[in-house]
Length: 122
Ligand SMILES: Cc1cc2nc3c(=O)[nH]c(=O)nc-3n(C[C@H](O)[C@H](O)[C@H](O)COP(=O)(O)OP(=O)(O)OC[C@H]3O[C@@H](n4cnc5c(N)ncnc54)[C@H](O)[C@@H]3O)c2cc1C
Image 1 (cartoon, rainbow, N blue to C red):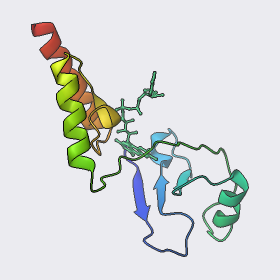
Image 2 (cartoon, rainbow, N blue to C red; image 1 turned 120 degrees about the horizontal axis):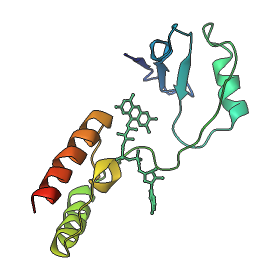
Image 3 (tube, helix red, strand yellow; image 1 turned 180 degrees about the vertical axis):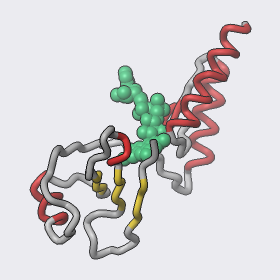
């Protein structure tokens, strides 16, 4: 299974990314996820997609307030402070927001397996 992403570094486009997920289905379907930064209504998304010839109708709409890890100028200090504290009190954190890293799913799964091994060893 593979999805193909197309990125649009265009300030005039509401979408910054298309994810073509048709090959997740058997038989393959002509499905695409469109992404935008910030809150957009379903109507805004449909309107933005109306000029794309390959987008015919909207199947769903979802908003995630916390989707991406942001690496700002305070990133290193803040995450080091928090991670050191949690480590000190014996709390494990894991995953994209647990480690505050721009991980994809494969890395999250690998990290979970590694942490489970570490905990079970002790
Ligand atoms: C738009 C988008 C597209 C992506 N595309 C891909 C892709 O194509 N391929 C890929 O590999 N990865 C992709 N990712 C990344 C992938 O989704 C993440 O890497 C993965 O989901 C992170 O897993 P996680 O377990 O760390 O966190 P999450 O999947 O975010 O799970 C954390 C869970 O904890 C819950 N939670 C949060 N706070 C609390 C609380 N206080 N109490 C109880 N529960 C809580 C949340 O509701 C959530 O269910 C994408 C991410 C986004 C946002």
